[in-house]
Length: 136
Image (cartoon, rainbow, N blue to C red; front, side):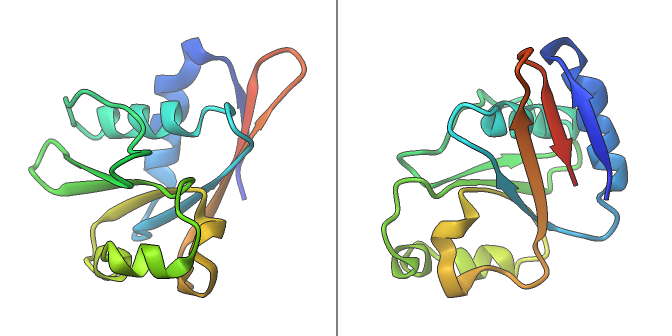
């Protein structure tokens, strides 16, 4: 497990370090309190992978699809607004998770029994000085 503490101005470097540690893993489960920076971090990861989209939280669409520099899809989920794992199933979560593409999932606890067994947990913690600590 890696642990890095950073401020927003260091976000690109931390995102690149995260990307370099991804290996063959494709599903990343982001945990952290509301406002901890999950969406901001995921947007920076997508930017560093070559996506040039207008990033935002997919809170209302549940999943946003971006493309990396090679045209490969990057899926960003925000499951905060779902109430049951069935809602995730209905939106095709299992198909995304089984696609072999990178899936970056906020609020993965909402998946219940649909939580991918091969998903890697990424925790973001807000420190008293406003910096963040990320563990992956």
